[in-house]
Length: 55
Image (cartoon, rainbow, N blue to C red; front, side):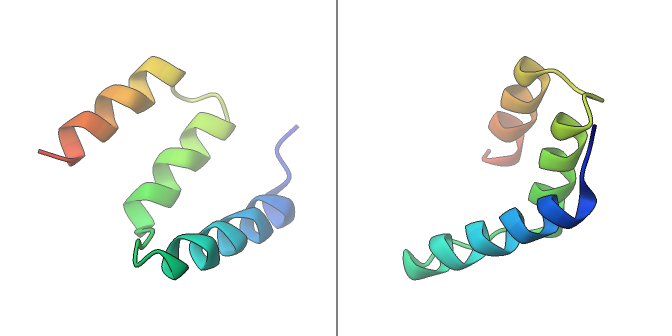
């Protein structure tokens, strides 16, 4: 079962951790993670989308 409150907390922690390394999480990144968490996409789908985003 998906817990939106916990997901938001985890994303905020992730954003802070990455910001320390000058890396930033976009809304598109969050949407992709949410889709994976909710099992709307597979891990392979997520990997393929990330590869396309980095081009």
